[in-house]
Amino acid sequence: MGLPTIAVPEYVLKLPSTEKELKYRPFLVKEEKILLIALESEDQTNILNAIKTIIDACIFGDTLKASEMPTFDLEYIFLQLRAKSKGEVIELKYECPKCKTEIPANINIDDIKVTFQDKHTNKIELDTNLGVVMKYPTVELQNEITKTLTGENKSQVEGIFTMVKSCIDYIYDNENTYPLKDHTEKEVDDFINSLTDAQFQKMSKFFDTMPVLKHEFQIKCTKKKKDKTCGHKETQTISGLQSFFV
Image (cartoon, rainbow, N blue to C red; front, side, top):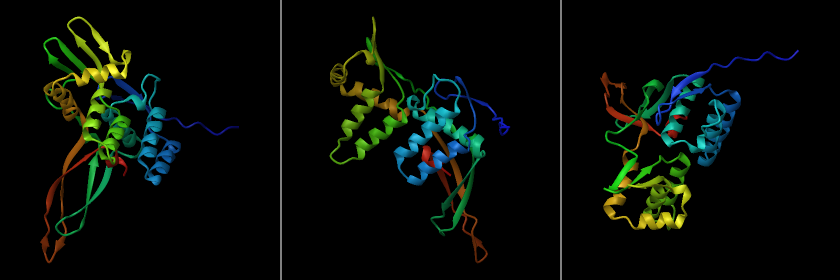
């Protein structure tokens, strides 16, 4: 007789980008093993691949893939998986800059939200007859751009140009829409090169104001020395996937 099957609970979340409901389950020992091995390697590519593998395994339905998600969606989903799998509290530690004492900080995952800036939009009017609709970058694209910006002999302009080009969904005018997937890379390059600086800056601003998963909180040092409390206070911000590997 075979071993009994263990029932796994199911949960529902709303995707920050679309507010559509998504069903998921906690990650299991087999998925946690994948993550721990990746973290042990300290290789960012391995860690990212492990996160994508875990998300794809734990969400239900075949229409949504981790590799195609906006960065903030992927981070939010992973955080929810972490909460249901290992608990809702993240235990962090900071060093007091004043007395060098270790300060513990417990963060409730339910308090960590995706922040949307006012007036942010993915539809950008370049003039009265022309505009573009942008799509959010995936975490893979952002990592590649970061490598471009920090690599030797690489131009920051090149990185920004690549980011903008990769995130245009379609161009539109008063009569038609032009999906970029239907056009050659040269045609897209020629279009971007024909923009004025003001128009290009409008498109670049999309990335400065796009949603981000982050949480601000205060820490306070309570270390006592000679009947006096250190009392140092400061605001900390956690954001990005690395903040959640605790």
